[in-house]
Length: 196
Image 1 (cartoon, rainbow, N blue to C red):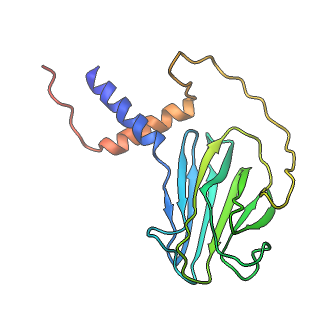
Image 2 (cartoon, rainbow, N blue to C red; image 1 turned 60 degrees about the horizontal axis):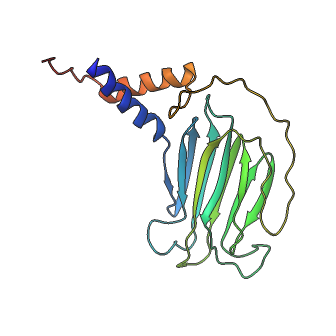
């Protein structure tokens, strides 16, 4: 019983922290799949400055247990002389078939089943942007910023849920299977300790 508890706790930790974080490098392309309860940090650089001539492309996709992805930024400051982001450093977000550019201090906040983020820079800059892509049960919307765009409505889906015990969230069978699979993989050939 003790071994099962250790496996379950290990699997829970692996499951809830399973998504890969992204720190842009000069030329990079990456795909990150998110499951329910997962999130991924997106940073324009690892140090105090982002590099000139950077093109960092990340596509966030939903996994089997994740209905949609919300992408938003807690810190956002990309150098661009024009509000249109033309010619300056920018972040392009493609969600729900719509593409929009973001720069200066107007960050994206979008929810969709697939979100593509492309960060491009012209010059070295000390400004930073830190964003989060997370699994969300919110219906998809189009990109929105403080400067333009109105959200497109998508019909909301209703799902039945089982009441959870206080302090615990309900897990679907797919989530339980994922936890078990990841715990087996994490433990590998580890042998259980002798019971005393």
